[in-house]
Image (cartoon, rainbow, N blue to C red; front, top):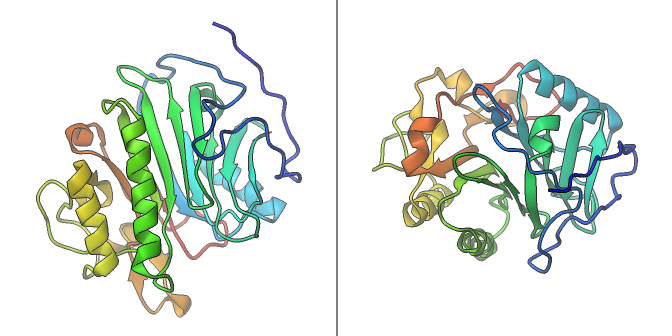
Length: 280
């Protein structure tokens, strides 16, 4: 097996690209290292809408918070970087998928050990990307999602759901699947089948119904809702002026792997000048 070391890249040049797969046309990212089972304990994954990664100080804050909360893989939304790319900043690898404008954009930020496990990357759009990691007993397939806000119509949202399901059919079906990001939807309180647990937040809206229907079709569980925590550990976004708090960001896994998740909640103390909370 051939391995490649990754040179560090200056984060001030986020347009750098090193073979990240764009759309469905390629077959894998460059600089691939397959490393089996690097963790001897639990892996921590997180999602965070950071509002923008255009300022270098935001990235430095992200690296500090990632270290502080011992997160292995952090999914980022609203990155606002152009194009697609794969860079290193110190010991963090950042693989990103953006557009032609400084809007939207998604990314994965990984520690050194997780970065070595990347097998495949697909950058679908500035709202959706996927990484596959080599792992035991099965590989991990992680999707990063940034759904449109209520300013967009339902047809725009349905397009992204279709793209997600296309990605799911491209896998073997037995991967440890994680889908996470900013869904701009409220699934709300109240248990429903094996999809939503008893610890959601608020009242379900129409976009929340779309999330639940998607999870039912694909046998997914919304992990935010399965752990009993106070509301300050459940909300992920606060309205301007902190007049209301909502749960909009979610991490989902296949229902058959639900017991592998030992905890899930937000960290309101984590700070990168965003109105969203870090959800781990």
